[in-house]
Amino acid sequence: MPADRYNEAIPQRDLKYYIFDWDDNILRMPTYIHLERRLADGTWVPHLVSTALFSVIRNDTVNYRPPKGVWENAFVEFRDFADQPESKFLQDARTAIDRLFEGKEKCPPSFNVFRKTLREGRIFAIVTARGHQPETLRKGVEMFIERILTPEERAEMVWNLRGYLVAYENAAENERMTDAEVVENYLSMNHYHAVTNPDFIRLVKSAAVPDPNNSETRKKFAIMEFLEHLFRMVERIGSRKPISVGFSDDDSGNVAAVADFIRTTLAERFPAVKFVVYDTSDPDVEKGHKLVVSGQLPLL
Image (cartoon, rainbow, N blue to C red):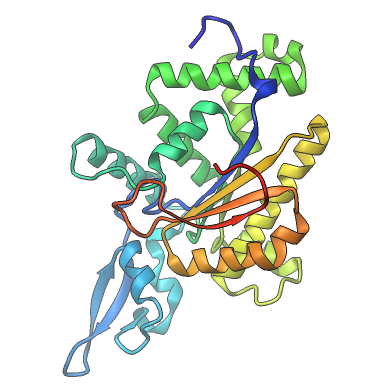
């Protein structure tokens, strides 16, 4: 990286944005869903499952059910509670990173893409089926920056972010802001959506979206919110460059729903955008399987 204070080449850079699921996509979280499993004799016993396994069995209502028939009981580890000294999400993110460093886990499919996204200062959204507060997800991103990015990579991120400030905001702001303020400004521009969070569910219902109780519907709403946010930014800076948006998720059901959403809605609503969807359900395929490309722009 050059010794210049900011990346002067930012004005020539393409407009590339990302939407990431978190679990088993960015980090392999040791968070469990609490279910009950039916035994051969018809009795039910407590049964913990990972998010990866749940994506496979979630529609098997014959052999699996939530405790006492209440789904909220199944996802207690995916919520924030006032009496917690630290969110379970942050505890599990720390453990997941520790396991990477110890060689006990390999990097999930989108781990390196997310790392590059941060280094380059690209705008992104986290869209997850969890129920945490947006601030909790943001703190998880801050932990990733602190613990995963090397000092050189963090310096590269700030160098790129200062380049964006000079190119599209105000050069004086770049000179005034400390490195910490530059990163804070960047993180505040991204979206952090946990689609089973009660506040987010209320937001979806207030928008009169059909079938707001469906998790896939709420993910679509989060994606649309992010795209509208992006276009407000693009219009404000007056850029006419090609735009691409990549979406990655390890749940094949979500992938299929988003792919259909692109074909039926997003491609028409945002015809100038190239959309790419990655199915990251196979942990052995880095970046995942590319399933949908919409638009006429060069591939990511």
